[in-house]
Length: 333
Ligand code: ASP
Image (cartoon, rainbow, N blue to C red; front, side, top):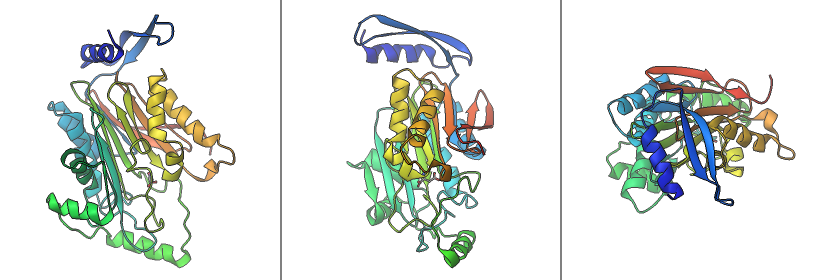
């Protein structure tokens, strides 16, 4: 049996199993050709996790999954909740602007077949994640930027909106007095919304959406719309999504790294920890002054999350329970 088929069979036989079940899995060592036997604790499906404390968003996603909907529909539905939430100043409508006062959105989405779509520097449209999904499903491209992305959003029926709310405008005007660009660690209870889901068939999808870092240079794009950095899904292995200082995530291709580490046998927790270590242990890393956090899920429904600093959290909806869980971290306050 080849590896792809083997993993597929394991997946089908484990879909829907109760939390805490133990799966004996057997894969072939590529060098010795001998079977590798591993016992693994598995979680139950469906399941959704998201960066930060976003219970309304995970609830919307879980509602889709509970009715038998697929993981792709679930993550889009979940992200849309936060995009429309004007109180969240780091996603969608109400996001903090760049230094010139423009709110610009980045988002991406990836499905169980490895298809992906993304938008960068999107203006005047709240639901960047829906535009990204349409790029994936209805265009020959993976990424649309700026005016082209905005034009496409109107073509698919999304409306033009002013994304700069009074609250965000006031915050920007206050910032302009000193005009210092200094990303602040955990300034709110959430930043980028990254979401990963496993549906009742055991299939995985993921999405992430953000207005990026407040008061960035005009034109700046972070990790969130870059497949492999802000988000990566491999339906045979698992998925990962990132939040925090995007530049540092891009430099280590963070989400792809986490998924590859899981492929090599690490648990989601161990993989997130290793990916954070790669950032922190770089020569001259300025990690004390920035935050990066990862959440990950594997094919068996096991989850993990880890960050550089305290106060990063993950929301997890599983077995009918929607809870926010504080993440472990490296730097002691
Ligand atoms: N990762 C996002 C970016 O760099 C921001 C964030 O998650 O806080 O644009």
